[in-house]
Each structure stands twice: as structure tokens, then as C-alpha cells.
Length: 84
Image (cartoon, rainbow, N blue to C red; front, side):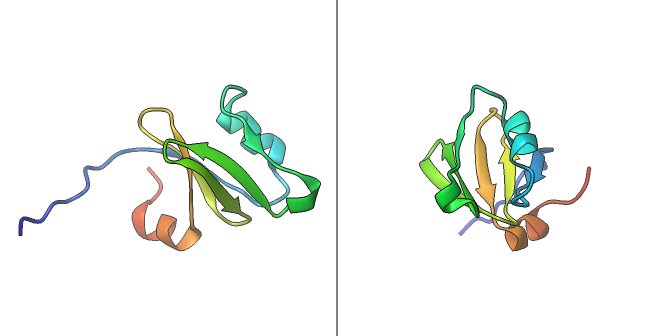
């Protein structure tokens, strides 16, 4: 089996803290809406290329290389990314 290494790519990301909805919305721009309700104030629903995904407080929201958005758990983010 051949092994492959992920190409280095610089991404932009913001961490959802539960108190920064407006900042997250600005990061994702108006054309990429997120869903949030008072009933579920501890999470965001983000439309990704694979469908809707939940971002819990503490998760990172990543803007991918093609302008797509997706959530990432903090432990995976820490293992995968470092400041550029």
C-alpha cells in the first residue's frame, strides 16, 4: 500500500465560543448562512459540501480551499493545524 502525506494548505478558521455568533456570521459571510435557535443555543448548524453538520461550542469552523465551510472538533484541529 502506498502512503500519502496531506499537502500543506493555509486555511482560515474561527472557534465557536457560544458568545461570538455575530463574529462567526461575519467570518462565514452572508452568502453562507448558519442556523441557530434559542432552543439549541449551544450549537450551530453549518451547511457543508456533505450536507448539514453540527458545530458545538469549542468546535472550529474552517473555510476550505474552495470557500466551503465545515466544523472541526478541537482535538482534531489541534493535531492537524498550527498557526501560519
